[in-house]
Image (cartoon, rainbow, N blue to C red; front, side):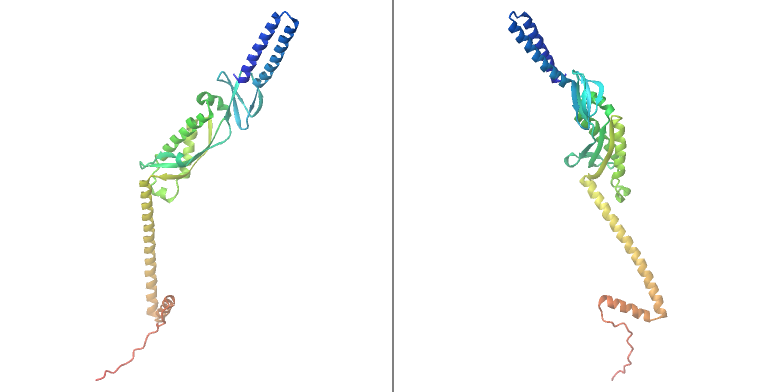
Length: 287
């Protein structure tokens, strides 16, 4: 029962005792003092009865009526409410909750290649008003709902999702798989918490692999970059050979094409423009 109800009962007992004592008093003044005192005590008792019969539920809170720690099945919205004076009201937070698992509180998951990783996770959830009596019976407090229902099942859902994820697979190196994995984790988590809690969103923005996996990923990326450079060099060589072939064909028809090409190269390199053919000067050997 509420504390105010206990005060009411105690004061009523005191008022009754005062009345009984007054009945046995012989002097009129003593009777009036006992009866007057009983009246004052009874008025104070009524004040505590009013407090015991009313309650105020906070904003975005859900009130659960209980009698001797057992829910009555009645839930209260925010605001002022009348209730039975012997009932208590326990509040649960009905607002949207955002749990951030970052830093030292990241969730450790096992990956498809048998390595481990630390996942940076955030989850948005909200308890359903109709389910609050059952949640109170099962978990007693809102913090227990968070830790034992939401967080624990979030860890299970993430491990189920990442168990089939291989960070070294080529498709996972080309694009980030985290948005798709986050959506899968949301679906699994929603199924595990049932109809008592609504899962609004699960996000895994980053994941830190162990040192061995990180080194393998870096090595694969370096090899992929080297392959891309080699393929580009091959394409460049093919195009250069094609251009040289076209140039050779042009020279056979017009020698000035070679002179023009030489001038272009000389300008690029800052060399002397010595691209014209030098005529052969006849010489007479001397004896």
